[in-house]
Length: 293
Ligand code: SF4
Ligand code: SF4
Image (cartoon, rainbow, N blue to C red; front, side, top):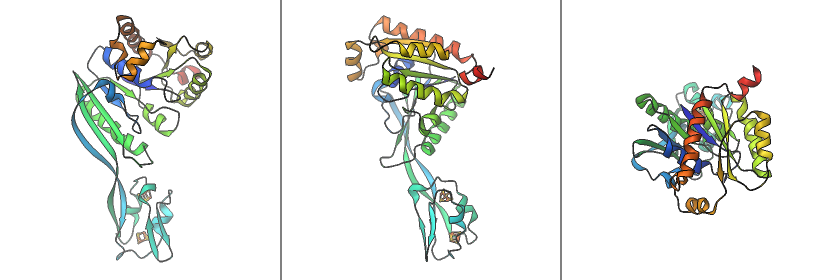
């Protein structure tokens, strides 16, 4: 089972939930940080990193002595990453999506594969569990091609070990967030009971519902704000998986990089119960499927 921990906006406590759930999961699993622009799950889980590798994308490199400026490559490229400009062939590696089309198409074999570094993928261990993290290169604009490589690594680990995975996903509802949750069996949406929290929670539900995955909600900082988020969950039949109380000791623990499930028996029980509810949710139809039934 792959469980994605997502949220409509940053700062809702998504990583706190991912770290605590990892702590109480019954069997050894794979904890994955796919929030590649700002990975911080490692700050809580403190894995022993065993291996790191650079991930890159194949981009075209021109041999000017062979290029006849026929323009076939620029006509093909939908991203304007290669262009004939007068007597020059210009490439824009930062805009290239690495499809390899231009390299295969060039009649003069004037293009060969070069590399654009995307980021670093690290693998390690947290006790019996495995840990996987992607960190996007500073200045790299496109995270989905990099995330695909991290996910490919995850698939290899799952195939070799048959373990469950908990993924800390990028916040929001943009392309990287959807890309991160798309292979999950269950999506856990973390929100807070405030007007801002509800607004972004609604956006996340709208963005992820068409994927047809079972979804559940976690209300963090319960006790502040109002009850609108609960009403919305009821109306949309989104099960409430847990409420995490708004307490000073939790905020302090977060600031010190502690896993909150370790703070007290009560908090640990909240996450144990969340684990059980996620397992139940995994065998239910997704929201999209239910809506179409
Ligand atoms: S397709 Fe090949 S020969 Fe034609 S412009 Fe592109 S690189 Fe040059
Ligand atoms: S590899 Fe694909 S995206 Fe990149 S320049 Fe060539 S055609 Fe464009």
